[in-house]
Length: 330
Image (tube, rainbow, N blue to C red; front, side, top):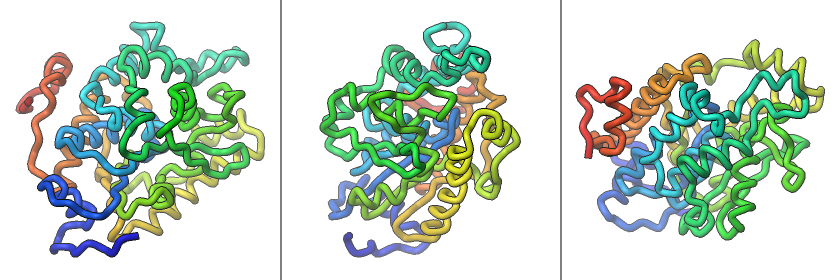
């Protein structure tokens, strides 16, 4: 691992490294950019990635857990400009307007043979057809691209997409977001949601050779102190056998351990919004896009970079949803 960067006052070394690269200055370091899990909050980390892509900035290692991994794949594939399209087809409106987008159906609780959360449909449908992930680029990417997953015994797995057949890369993408007993198992790849064992894949980035890590958070500081919620408790008691309950509970301890280990590190910078107005009851397109735009703006402020105009392709959906007031486009 390389020696530490000299740090000017009031700027984190990771932010300093990004500034230096944007100025075209060479360096010997490997910078990883990883995204936290977060369900529908992938829109937040996704637009943080989009802000970096607008600067033509690419990490040396790119990864994430669960939904955060999928937002990282859009970034690595150079497709974050399609963010509003992805939001449109996975929001409540897109979900009901087009049957091909219906990857989540709680009515299947009474239909044991039908998945409640059909990750195969999500990856093969909206994220391959409507806003298709650039699979050829992902498996041939010059940067290291990885996602996290979880073995049935609860131990973490790091899955690197580089050099894999596209069919295998798709299985990796499905594994990182495959929630036990909500999603069907994959007979060829018995792995589950990466958030269960490594929701903040900082250690994995260092294991892959990173010197510095920029971590994109989908949760607020107040949520870091929260324990398991009532809905999740009910899900564990009614749907999960005892062995999986311990895995679900363990993920909170592992997230806390990662935060405590790296919160004050000069090698890890957490981009975390102080507040975030988005939860499971706000799955309408406008709320999701508004949260995404806030993630874009926050990324620039946190990295101490000048404001960046939104992509011009975002103007129509922003105007349609009354979110374009005062916005600049380029």
